[in-house]
Image 1 (cartoon, helix red, strand yellow):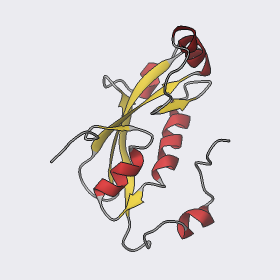
Image 2 (spheres, rainbow, N blue to C red):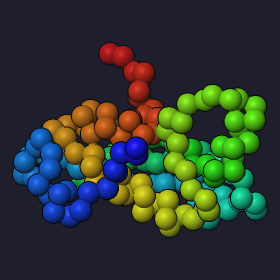
Image 3 (cartoon, rainbow, N blue to C red):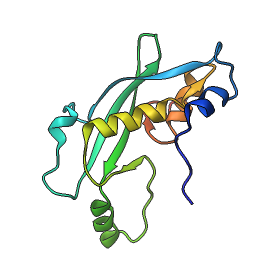
Length: 140
């Protein structure tokens, strides 16, 4: 039912449309709360939470980064939301029972291992599938 997000190391190195030599890779530069809080400052008191996080991501080994946002929510929060809104979209949502900063950061890093491409636009487009890119609606 759910799509598998992670690959094994052997699948990771052999998969993908680009050869290892010409592919660029995404790199997490920073990860913090939407208002600049450190992840450790966002520790919820109870089991019901939803925090918007901001990740600055760029090309590995290069300067610069773009911002991507996503929400980290508990199942309890989603259950409460369905009381008010019987149907809503789960786009840009990461779900976890407990807000654990280290686990969330590791999850983001694992997702980024699959964000490769010939250029930044291709990489950012892949990340935009699970996080809101700051330039998502930008038109030339």
